[in-house]
Every structure is written in structure tokens, then in C-alpha cells.
Length: 161
Image (cartoon, rainbow, N blue to C red):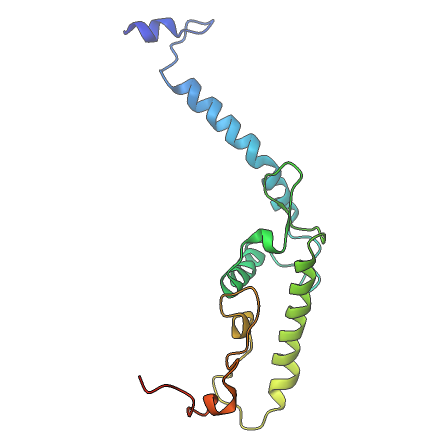
């Protein structure tokens, strides 16, 4: 036995392998830090106004990822940070961007479910409007033809490069 093993005996004279105490303390610290998130994850998503209230945490996260890519933003764009600085208060409505996102969700749903079906001779597969349709990876939505007009849309305004 090495000296380090002999020096690390507990009260029952059981040998504690080197590094095991550090691993135990690290595991305990990480578990303690994750505990609030795990508790809220068990409660499920809260304060859902657009999405069905029976959606799972995983389903909501998948939807939020769509926003992230469509607008090029992260959680803090719509969600308020917790007071302790760790994570977010996802149920809070304190960030005005969250309400804007809800309005946009209802708008795209209305376009897709009420207005587009009224068009005669729709293409198949059916094209739907999403956040990315207008935002295209940016926070501010911008028209695809901004500054170019209908001639650009018909192909007359494109350069011949």
C-alpha cells in the first residue's frame, strides 16, 4: 500500500481510493446546481398560451429551437433570467418579446389555417408560413423583396452574374 492510501483511512479504517472524495464532492455540487432545473422540469411547461398545455418539456424545447434558428436568437431574447443568474424563469411574462412571439404564433397559425386554404389550386405539398419565412435568421423580419419591387420577383431585376 502507498502512503497516500494509508493516510486516507476513515474512522472504520476503510481505505478511500485517491480522488474518490473529490469526485463525490463534485457530483454533489453539480447535483445541487441542477436540482432547481430538475424540479421545474418535473412540473412541466407552465404559462402556455399558444401551445397545448399537455405538451411535454421536450416538445416545447423542440419548438423553441425553431425560434432560435429562425430568428438567430437564444433563450434570453424572450425569457427572463432567474434572480440567481442561473437559467431562466420560462413562465414569466416580464420580457415583452415573449408577448410579441405569441402574437406572431397566432398570426402564422391564422395565415396557415384560415387564409392559405382559401387559395384556389394550391401546390402540393402545401407550403406553410413559418417564422423563418420572414425572419430568415434575423431578429427583425424583412421582406424578401425589400427595395426591389415586383420586377425583381419576376426575375427582371436580377443581375446576370
